[in-house]
Length: 347
Image 1 (spheres, rainbow, N blue to C red):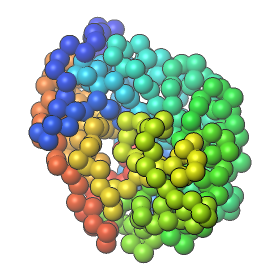
Image 2 (cartoon, rainbow, N blue to C red):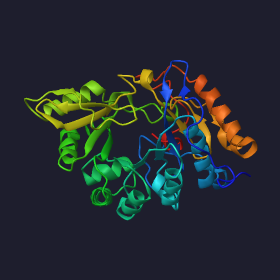
Image 3 (cartoon, one colour):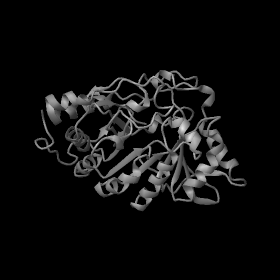
Image 4 (spheres, rainbow, N blue to C red):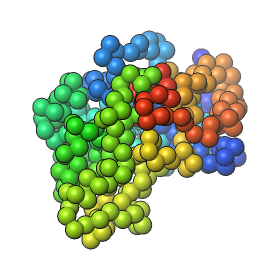
């Protein structure tokens, strides 16, 4: 089996990744585990999922080697996801390995925040640039209900620890659900803004074959914007022209008309598609390359890394990106999604 030691890779030496729609792929989302310490209702089916055998999870050396292949193809941004990435033991060691790869200039982490109190400082010191933290309610009982295990006070303490560790402009991700947290849109914005954070609201998606999707609960991007404006009478949302919060992902950003520092992001895969600007692919915890979140087909990069090394992986990446679809077929009634649950690939 190849190791990170005998397969060191240089900087970007190959032509950048461009798909048939001329979209440049420079962003890789890496799921480091398909396990989580929460069981969020929009992420994990009631009866659970079949987890990947631990023996089939990519080692840190394999992750770094495959990320190195992407870096040679011009990928410069990496986001670590899960499941919940912080439950992977010694995660900071992986961050250090990724930080050492030539061409990787931005490492972000998506987390539920449960372990941030202990990990914020080591993550920052090891090289994580940016944090996205999920928080679906500011009410402890509602938070526990939607996460089915979560403790709001731990997440809030984790946010404080992250700020103390030097993370700035932390993004707070909220899945917007009618009848559950739609009355908290304004409060979540004010909570974030008072801490120099960026609130972001996400439309529900029909993952796991649509079994977690309730059409009547979908809060559209337009309804989210209206809720923000209702919570701030006399104000309107205008596009964020400064782009201070803009990252590599799919969120579109807006600000209050009277305060350009009051930024809110919206991720709208259902009602305001962003497929035409998609710049990302995903690597699962077992080494499967997914060129689109909305489909189950994948390329086994783990097997190629072990059998053919970097050249085989790079050729497979190119071929997969060359056939990247124009877009997804999510439907507002809850069909058109993949069989995999969100926990199995990362958001």
